Length: 388
Image (tube, rainbow, N blue to C red; front, side, top):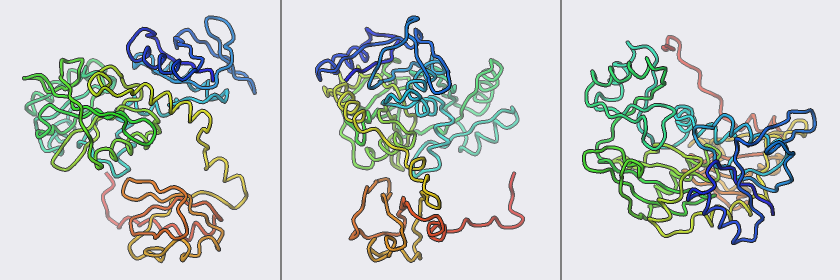
């Protein structure tokens, strides 16, 4: 198998470790600078050139796209995808995770804990937004910041207003987040590879500092995650479509809260702290997934006229609740249950004897007319309800 690692820093720890892990598995691996590529957009024949020459064939790509080259880097990853070459993290997933606001918006639709967040444009909207978060202190984040850069603690409403006004004057988009006092300058970095966390560490800020990033002088220690925290990390990565991700979590009185999801997490801190071969786990996943890449069921299965895919939420009073799949008669109605989503866990290819519980979400394939009858109708808004 021939593998390309897209990285602008071939000698940095993470790239070097990934290359070593690939060689250890007898893979033909090359490190390619993403900025040395050019692409050809042609009908039926998308192509890539490297250093002016047409790129030879590769079986898989491992993107390590830095924040400063996100736009160009994701364009190159997308071109690999158009050429039918497997990419461990897709261009779309990288783009979504790199945008702090967009990733939080995507996560907010799901059962994921996260700090209360506001995003405003007008100056007069700043103080009301801070009040909705519970008042100062608040954390102000620049959307494009990395490694703790552009993260500011504002102790009072007036200070927050002045900081936001200054940043907006410099054409910076900013988020306002509720400050979680009980975290006490600590967070957890969980390294998700595939469907589980392979390593995790707790990061603690230096005295007088609230940012726990190692680049800001924070200290680290290995940590074993509870099932609740591991589930939150894996769920967040999967929602954003990432097979490999560094998920930053806060430990709060209300359970885990997702701060950020990184599509190109650094490996030095977590491997040094935990002693776990994270690079090896990533390469093993790449080799496995390249042989059996994901299939977009919505594109493939809806080709049959009158058939489609639907998510069916199971209400407490639904006819499906507390019955096994066989007892529901769905198969006889030409509906196949592909998976059951239950409290953050995914149950793939469930057997007919599997009981369906209230709160489950069934991913079903079958006749559209039958699926339409299974999906509960959306509630209508009451007349007079405020819409803003």
